[in-house]
Image (cartoon, rainbow, N blue to C red; front, side, top):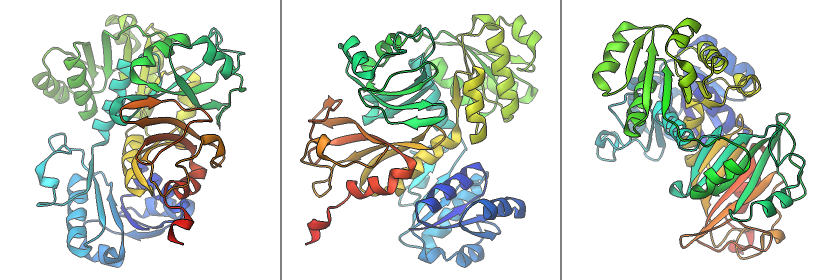
Length: 455
């Protein structure tokens, strides 16, 4: 596949990295010579300096021969114009645009086939807010990923020393929690992913990813020693678009909100858009201010400023002063390990959300969704089983899955099964699997067509 990525920021760089490592021909366009130098030194891709909204630059990138255009600059206008030019210069290319304007959502008619004809519009802030609302609904988890229209969840959480599962094998843990069917799909141990078996023993500080029906997730979290008390009070540090989108969703849930924002004009804008939130003009990294506003009563502090270091500091201060849980907005991959080791409970990552949406268009087979997790070293894939694929009509124990791959759930005619070795996938089943990123090419092969289908 030939892909043009417009924008060499965090999102563009990581998309180009993923696509190039999977054997795609990637061209990345950016105005910044410094950014492109960094790309050239680290990635096996072609670079072109210039504006992604320039017809001449896109012709130089051979847009007419490309299969996909991914426009992820910081400018909505540049992204929209790039996709509009792609509609004119390339009839078959898929067009993906990052659109941050909160008034232009994915359902806007401006993006449909009769107008701009953009195949996928992504609002990273809106997607990451959706992820945080999942954490609010399932307190105790550090990550929640939706599948099957929200009927199945992949929950990620740490195991502490007090957890009754420590020192026990997974097969024994399943016996202890018979009333709820679940699958431990992956374990992160010392920053390395493990695909577990029934004989795998849970250790202190393990990070588990558990697949289960949504209605069972709270009980499973509670079983593993997590606090699942409903959230009632939330502090938000930062008053940008992400804070506004998040506050609107929290207000719908009837959750009490305090927002701390440095800029007076943003405080005034927030006050005009929100009905019940308390807006405070101040610094969310001020220990005195947090104490004065009774941060110890907060169920969550969520730091969403544009400064990642400030977000981490605000979360650490809040936790030190008694806030039950904290979430920081962080885009940089190299900060992710730091966050988990210093006690911050969750990460809000717009880049993750953006990449996950784009992967849906890239994966071969009848893929419904593809979501990266754990610093993008692993991926959860939701797909429709094809009659012609190697994965159907035989017991799972007889299927040679790529190393690091596990089938997590099978949905057939509204019935959800957490499978065992004797389970069989039938054509048309909705299937969820978890795999290491390195195994994706082999996974794609078994999801598509058997070689003997053509013989």
